[in-house]
Image 1 (cartoon, rainbow, N blue to C red):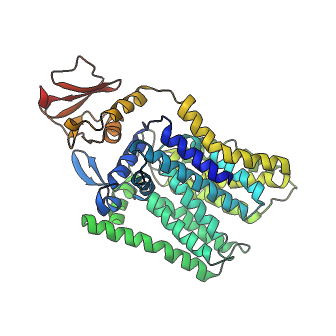
Image 2: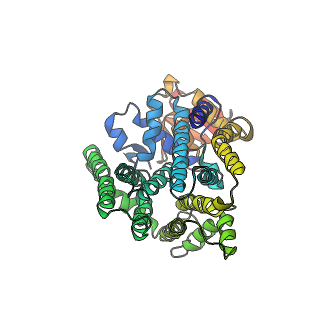
Image 3: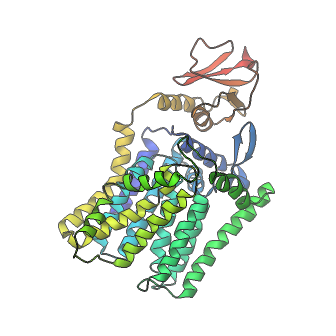
Length: 446
């Protein structure tokens, strides 16, 4: 009952309270989800975006993370809030997966500490009001392992593991290789080892949706998704850095640093437990599973020359499990109940505070609001905006105004143009709107 109330309250906050997506990637992902609604089945399996002046299929990531946002909008949630509602649901699913994984190794009340620790990782708190790929992936990864460690218990967990593993690949592509590899760790652990046919069954179930998605993408575009994705996004990241500081072969320094810093303070709890010998470690199989999860994630991310803390986001599941394992034997019943209460309150409280109190209406927020207010302007219907591609303004316009944005060079004597920084003294043309970040000018209506 408490969880139902928490989910309902959170959805009320994200649907009714003021909050604007302004972070660049979030605007892109939310816009792609918006296009799925009313775009026919092809839009769901081969979403299209405007890239360097051309409409092309979006193949930077699989589209699985966008489907829930599109479903929320199709169910009647306003487009500006649908992605927030979907992200909140993904977050609850991730927390539930973390708790379910922890409950395999400890009591229900102490397992709640793992869920609370996950929610209170800085990286997770930063993501709860965005349209991210990380929280959908964390939900799928957590449930993959929560099912895998129970494969020996009941056949139902074969389906849970297989479907969740397919979800890992459909929302985050090759990042799903880490949860897949952890199935081998589950097989190696004598206390967790399931019958081999159940493990093979789960893997077989996972393959089905991946093949079906690729076939539907091919039907819609004439090109298979997975080869194009590997060529464009994965293989290129092995040699091409995403930031000025990333160098081929050097990214491991960054990812080790992320693992040490971004997991604080929760990573200190298992460290203190290990240093407090001769006390034995509780559930040693769970400790090994979590440690291998962190190591595989860091090693896998280090193969890329791109740098970003989001690439090791899934280690927050492992460090949350380790934190709960470290504290569980000494957690008193009263404290455990308090942790459970805090877990239920944490997400709705955080979203309410960020929506009403802590979020400053900066220039991006104000600009997003102005763009949304012009979304239904009939003079803008079906048109394309051109202009400088610097900064996140194209993504803001793309999502909040609902127009395609092209960065291709265009003459400034016709069409709609976004002029960053321009105000009422913009060049000759009809000024459609003015925002703190720039003005939209219609040069066809001089």
